[in-house]
Image (cartoon, rainbow, N blue to C red; front, top):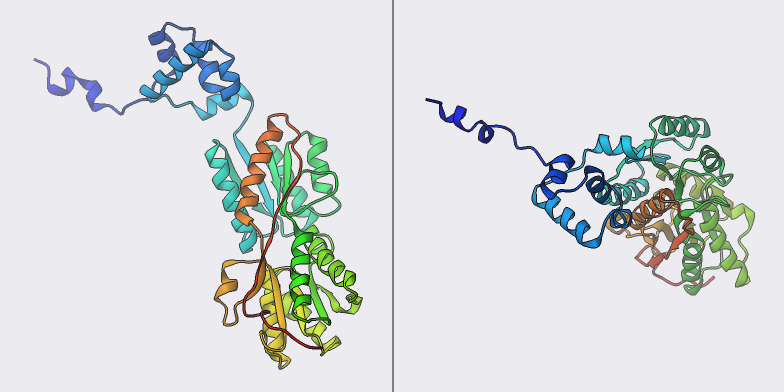
Length: 352
């Protein structure tokens, strides 16, 4: 007599999901028809057979727990279902938040996103692009593009789908915050509170974020009859230490400054530190406004006013746009609207 295991060995084995061949046999269809229905996009799958057959196949596949083989699908479609993201530094909270949006949106549509640092170094950027191409990624999201657009030009030349995020470059599709408008919002706020002598902690001139935010701010001041002189524009990195050094230069050049606009929150936090060294009190005799509205901005001893950008949303939109480009579409660039969040660091009026 057979043992219980010998009588019914299948009950003791690891369950397997159904195969295309099994589904085709069970439904009396050709395997190629079933494959086109289940492994194509919704639109292409609908063209593979009648609506009734498509619905029948998909319902049965769900019933028998059919799961496509990612490797097999990749071989058939010549796609890896991977996208690469290049950023200057993932340790930057803004960039990590953007990548969270990228990763979340990519997962939802069956893509795997990986990220790599370039440290804003063109040579490293080129190496990482070549690495992504060697991995045969379906597309690239550039979070470190320079205004010259060299990296995007290379991807276009190589025929690799790509989209820019956070930064822009002329002639290339991008998903960003409306940085120019954000700069204007900060300027209008300081002007409305009576500030006329202000300094700008700008970013490096190769990044559109700093150029556009600074441009929107200074243009607004000029339109109101208070142009910001060149000596009150200090270029620096996006970190707190660089922001402190830039603020120190500005406060030495013009001790009578009553307001500072930093194109990045970390630079603004550094500026608040430098202000103390100069005997200034942020929120009382010196207003400071940052950009991006990172989570720590509201937790500071003097909460930081900041222009809020939809960092997570930019990441999600970048994936959606890249998916359209991979599919052969030509979507337009998008600029997500900013919002000024006023807190104690600038919520006071002055008389100059």
